[in-house]
Length: 359
Image 1: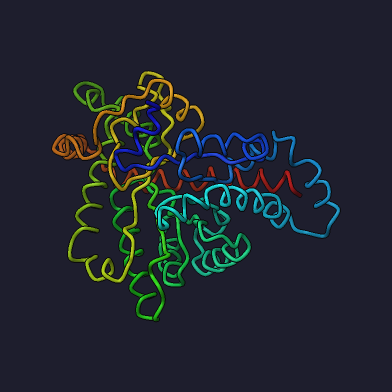
Image 2 (image 1 turned 180 degrees about the vertical axis):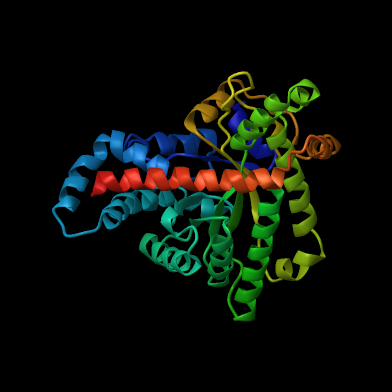
């Protein structure tokens, strides 16, 4: 059986971390949905930069847009919003049949707004209206300003994909913002049932940074390499289960609210010494999502082994990894702050390069 479909049997959704007109026009995304059970799509500025720079299907539209008195950002949105709408439409049946639990497409607010809560709120509301699809997720970074905007967007009934999370501290802050947003929406007489949110925990970059620190320490610390990201994800999943199955969420669940699902992001293995499915096979479990770049999707289809729910296993080992890192002077929450800042810079650079294409 196709391992991608086996994952679905364990309650996990696989989303594609890519979108382009080539995927849409040549029927690749439709086949991924039909044959592989792909249940969602995530995008970011780097993905759209590559799509527009390399894709033959954008040239005529971009030339026409450049003849109009529009800003570079307005031209970019005019190019990608139709792509997002088409992807939403391909997943619309799944979204409907799942009762709104699956079938989402993510579109990110400008990285320039990462420290601007009001600007993020305005952009999120504007993009939601422009795409005008019930299965859209507005993507917002888990910065302090982003967390403020997330609460406000959820409170306005906007579904959100929280991006650039790298630590358990980020997971906790984002979950609390989601809960506050739901309570705000409910208190205002709004309907919480259509609201969806996913919390995207980035994995491979965690190991890249922590492994480098461990190699600088040498000796016994070397045995801890390649384990920090999976440990973080497993502990985040444990907290997810406790939070959304416990008393803090009971009243909201009774009102029809959905848990904020954990999503594993940055799942392409960067260290060639590690398994190409390091951030896939150990993190299979109910009510989770894994978003895969093309190469990791192909690897899972080709040689993935899906035999059990794995994300809830070896929790003691995950806690032991944290304790061992602390003994070596490594703080994963502190590392998460550094990684978030680095991630923001990378997205800002990708967005700037994207706007150069549309200027």
